[in-house]
Length: 259
Ligand code: 13P
Image (cartoon, rainbow, N blue to C red; front, side, top):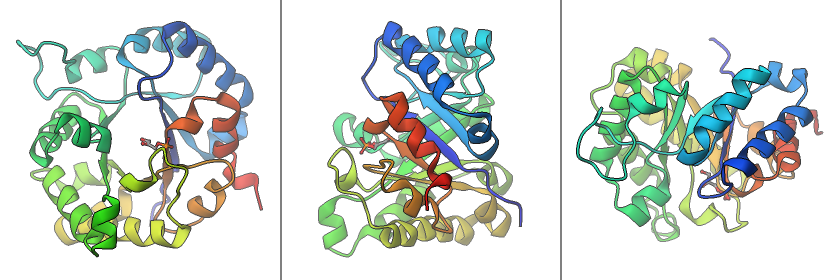
């Protein structure tokens, strides 16, 4: 079985203007070592208004960080005021796009069907979606967590081919753990990431389920990253708050040096 390369992603959400973004990426490049880059793929997902500036810094300084976005529309162009197309992101050498983050779903009403259109459009533009799933506290306490994420994955990836799914990134982010300081235990996170992998296996088979990378997200910090990353079905982390501080983010990326 091929090794899955860990992917640690910083989702900056609506933080950092383009000046702050340039400073953050430069600082991150100083604090990461070549060993870090050998062991882990690192991506950052700045707000849209920062992407061109961050792209310029990454490319002119040869910084081996993958450029990502947080969201996009599924159409190539058209009368969609305020939206950004996958083609526009691809033109800026964005290679990863977060799709269906729980904040988009909960605050902006994104549905599984829209997530599916976006994931399909991101792939069609030559980029890789990070498709998010995760349950609310109520759903977890009601014993519906596995059913919820399975549905999000099956509907979110509907119509994709097994070889496309094998190259995707999925992120399990329990909503109750996002920005709350409450992390899923490594065992619970492993169980849910295994559920996600099982859902992929049930529909797309072994090649897809062994290839797909599954991140955990929700209050990932330097202190809990090593135990989370040690789990067999966790291939990376989607980090919010702790990715805003380059030193803290770098300590998460160095998880393998702990213990
Ligand atoms: P926090 O790491 O701030 O909990 O955010 C997680 C998240 O939503 C990443 O996409």
